[in-house]
Amino acid sequence: MKILLVEDEKELSAAVQKVLVLSGYEVDCAYDGQAGLTATRQGEYDCVVMDIMMPKMDGLTALKLMRQDGLNTPVLLLTAKAELDDKVAGLDAGADDYLPKPFALKELMARIRALTRRQAVVVSPYTLGNITLHPDTYELSAQSTVRLTNKEFKLMEYLIRNHTMYLSTERIMESVWDYDAEAEINVVWVFISSLRKKLDAVGADYQIKAARNVGYRLEKRNG
Image: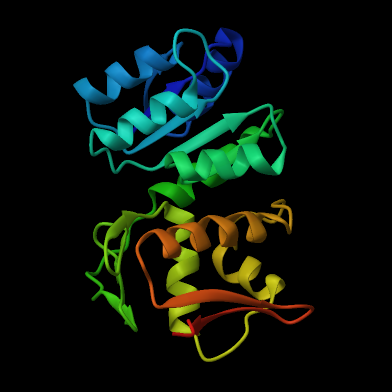
């Protein structure tokens, strides 16, 4: 399995590369966003791990251009910023997950394993109202189509499969973030917010409703 590591802090890059190689991964390194973008255009990777704050081209810009190129590879963003808006911006740009600095290498490895995990069987699309969720492409379709990140897809799948009931934040955390015991509870709100925008963007006839102290569920829009 091949990883692209895009990180301008060379000491950190070397440390992460060493751990990845010892864990059996093949690793290519790039030290700025432009070099990372070029690497994805010239080679194939199973996962991209990329910093946000970098010279020549920042990680968010590089990620947007990667997605415009049609890259479906899972992308994990590394960032020193922990503000909610920065997390949402990363998801909107096409990130599958994010990990604030400083981080434990053990947690980084767990997130990479989760992002690169692939289902062994073909799963039929999920449908609800005019919504279709495609497991093979991670696309959400209604009146138009948008690509979901890895975690957005898992959350949307979970909401569709359980659309008749409210799902508590704790239950969502257990089902969607089961690999990451250290994830903060507000990560659910971050991904709910991102999914709401994408449901609006594709003209879905269902929306995510919240009930205080109860949870979230998909409900038919009025009109």
